[in-house]
Amino acid sequence: MKVVATESAPKAIGPYSQAIVMNNMVFVSGQIPINPATGNLVEGPIADQTRQVMSNLSAILEAAGASLDKVVKTTVYLKDMGDFQEMNEVYGGHFPDHKPARATVQVAKLPRDVGVEIDCIAVL
Image (cartoon, rainbow, N blue to C red; front, side):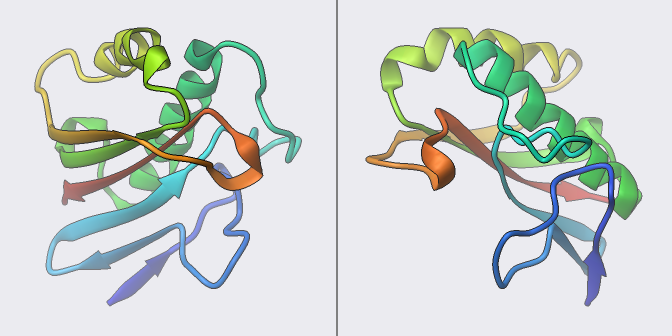
């Protein structure tokens, strides 16, 4: 088991790793819209939040030796399912060549009261 950590994505804010590599699989922890350069939340429209989340996921995958085109499964957590279409447009733009398996759920609350969190599993 290998722990993945990169300065190009937000540091873990609890007892977890940004990602774990095991048996040629990368398990990326849920990412929220924190700008790693500033440590500040990206607020505003869900599209802006989703862009930052996808950037964070991409940075972690790169540090692990993978990329978004190797993602096989994601889980999207939305504070408001009414944001689904806007989130989905941004999300889909990051997967132009393949469509990972996905679950999308509405949750009562997310860390730091953000609108979206996404985790993923990829292959190396």
